[in-house]
Length: 219
Image 1: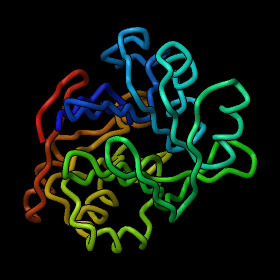
Image 2: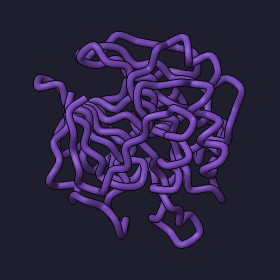
Image 3: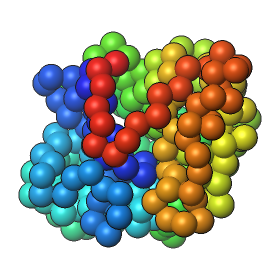
């Protein structure tokens, strides 16, 4: 599976047949490695409705006919824009063309009345990827260890989400095959040193890959 980091919390997952874009905040993002019109994903998954995550979802989906995955309240709003949406909610999972998607707890504002923020557990090409979305450190993360996650995408920016210290604790609870830090440096208040996070994690036996916006690798 090819993983591309497009900055902030936006990742593109591709298995050679299907593509899944997560939290496409590109327009107005000073670090964005692509323009919305340069992407044509089959699917888009959104963790919550804050602008730096929902971002360009509607514009991309309208142009490409992408199916959007979102929790029920956000899905209802997007469906009202005549978009193709598959709704779900925390604890629920559903089969997809690329594998499976499960909505898992996150502790954060949702950005929409009555809605819930979530993390995403994506099964694709025989791999399991955990995208934490925006979240505080929560004890539910310990349950993810049993999932044998191949890749965890964890926020380290602090201020609005976990900071580096709590992200280390999260990685220790989850014990993924690899962790990629995200949600940092986009705004002044979330500037962090990802290399310091990587070094601290490696001392604890936790493999970390720091990605520059636009960088890709094969998992």
